[in-house]
Length: 156
Image (tube, rainbow, N blue to C red; front, side, top):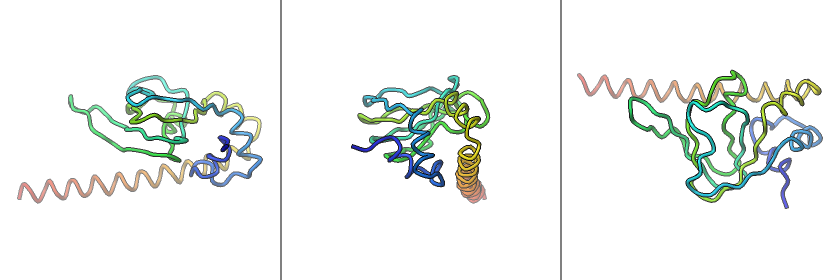
């Protein structure tokens, strides 16, 4: 049976960690089971953990102008909730489980304590997180540029 460490080795946030370092992180990880329709967290909630999808899928949505906008659907091996680990802000979106799922929960306080004790792990994880967030920002920039271009051609 796969351990959280086995799963984490395939997650972009932890891809540069050794097997021993992954084991250290998996020791602070907890597997939680959710049913379809369960909410993992809501937009505006205080943030205290990041999540990796062991199996199953989730929908990420954001409220904008009284409309709910789907941001993404994520499946096994994907992670979410990491932005608040960096900036300490409340949740920027709502995450709902689409089907029975197992999520690996990594608490922020436990992860920060681990990083304080083992700065080498922290450096590798923060580098991977920075690369991940840069990729996400580039995709968002491209999407916004495309949307603006479409909007301007409709009004011409």
